[in-house]
Image 1: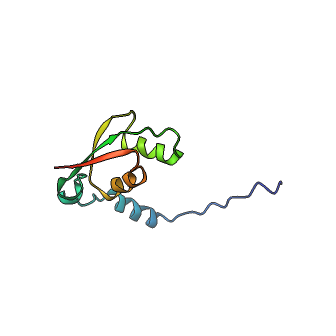
Image 2: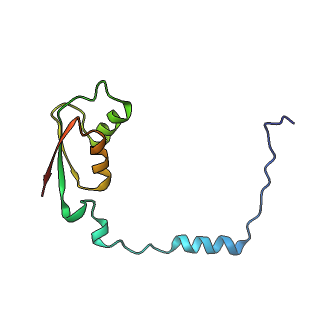
Length: 103
């Protein structure tokens, strides 16, 4: 037998363990509080982001960040929630975009 092929040992799981995990999976998750369910960020604040300079000639990750923000063309404007993840993306491409806080 070649060294690259390895034998696999199957282990039988007892029926008690299977039924317990199936019951745990069947119980419904508690509902998320409304404050956490909102994707609006703190107090519903939003950011208006405008692409005013092209990503051409910049690093690949900066172009991908623009795409993740939804910016495809020059002078395109999108609104995003004011969250730490969006703020981090904006910090990466701050030289290419203009940001306004709204609401």
